[in-house]
Image 1: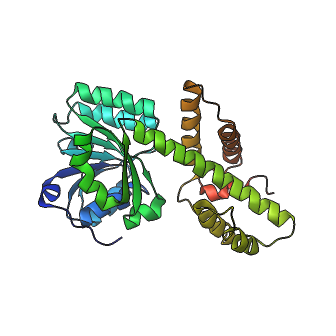
Image 2: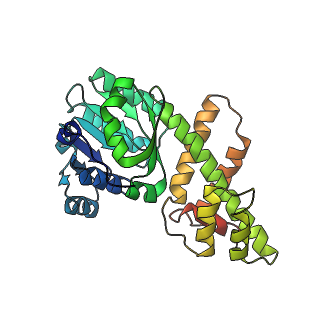
Image 3: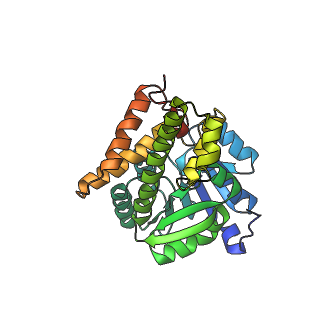
Length: 294
């Protein structure tokens, strides 16, 4: 994606960014490159140093973020988002906007939004899809839930980070749609691994499998990307098995709460449990291919 120019209003907005990991750091860098004033915080000092080298203003703690007009967070779990929001909401100015770009469950999002409302703070859930490459290149899809006016206030920042911005409903709707996406991704990553194990067990070279399957009716973005990585023996984490398991487990819990039968999801969860037992948790979910592959 080319360089995105933002308005003077967006440049003058003070943005805080909490969570400068594989996704958060490149997103924060893209905001900085667009001329936005960004203060950042992460518990990892190496990440903070990289953020500062990119031109960001590192905060010593969350209080250094709290006076920003818009605070974006990109964290690994609902508990982390809840902890950060609890600490921030008592210090943020009324009429500030808290934008959660993590992938968590819609119930937690709604609870956080209620607490925010009690403090005069708007909450927008804006989980992203597109992986590390999308974060680096500014080509993410952002799936947004929240009030129209709040989303309008942050849309210009979203457009720096994303190729597509989808407003899918009220608070929590973004997380619901993102979890539906994660169900598809997680199940497909597992089944791609099975397809390659099946072919190889029958004497077909993985490169031949990839060439044919990627051009056949069963192809998908996941097959093209994860199949390529299987051929290249590349299991370095972009989206690791632990995170994929977290998202599938959250989806399963939401489905159980709503009495929605999810048989394929339940099977996928069990496979990811086994992958973690086999020590694959920190590898990219492409490594589902390694499951039962002794």
